[in-house]
Length: 116
Image: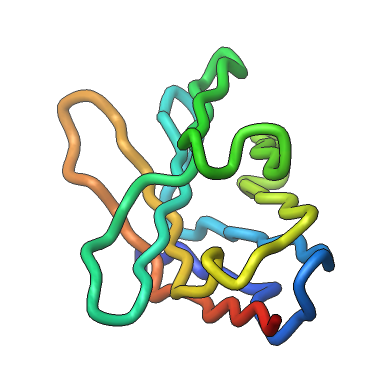
């Protein structure tokens, strides 16, 4: 069974930190672009950060300098370290795997709530 399972979300005060994890099973993350997306209430799902198989990273302007994406291919895991969190970072965070020639896979999401 193919699964991407996010964890690590929760309630945190403004200025705090969280680290999200994405565990892949039934698939591997090698040769794939792994991404984190965020969906705020009533809004569309937007990209937050991505990392290529070679380790190149890309971030949304709103999180640059505060969030760090990383991957551990041996463990089949992707992480998102989030520092200096703001209330506008609140939302459901989703993990996605993209691989050329294959369907995208999404996790079920993990809720992050930042209180002011």
